[in-house]
Amino acid sequence: MPKANILAVEDEEEILELLSYNLGKEGYNVQAVTSGEMALRSVKQQTPDLILLDLMLPGVDGLEVCKALKADSATRSIPVIMLTARSEEADIVTGLELGADDYITKPFSRRVLLARVKAVLRRGSEPIVTEEGGLVKIHELVINPGRHEVLVDGVSVILTLTEFRVLHFLANRPGWVFTRSQIVEAVRGDDYPVTDRSVDVQIVGLRKKLGDAGRYVETVRGVGYRFME
Ligand code: CA
Image (tube, rainbow, N blue to C red):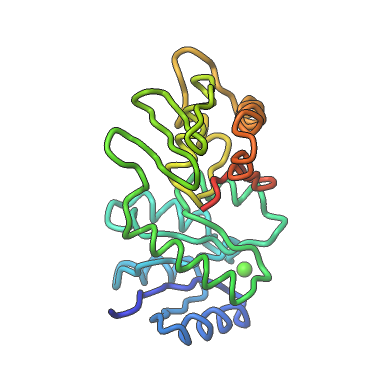
């Protein structure tokens, strides 16, 4: 099977070389560009299977590139992994809300780079884990929205409606990082006004009730939450 085409966008030459070298060695076809303008031109000529996008670019920056890609139906579905500095948490949140799939903080190891790339490419070709009726089976959990029921190792756990919705939303896309706003958007009920801050309260309650299985609900510091793959 031919390996995926990856577009790497990074203005720091050393990092760009590192990306090209490591991904090339794995058999990926890498197109390397050094600016947002070049990135947008490149995707029009050839649609990549994945874009590695540095956020801090001179001129059109990474967030603007992401916004432009997600606004265009021809490029909307191309997965985007942001490359960021650890200090750019606010930008990571904005990027995820703009539709980026994941992020890698610099400096990164070869192992992390390849793992993230592989995970995002795999997710792109696979449906989410939901079975018929929205049933999610993951680790030792069975989440049944039809019955509004959660089983941990076969034992029923009683959750509030909002806790249930948060869990179902996160567990349905394991490995994906979601910001608080994205969670609010997804679980917004008519019964209960969920806010960014109350998401944290829901998560605390959820973890407590799930017991050992609560560890699967991971905090991604400064960004949001993720259900462990
Ligand atoms: Ca940069």
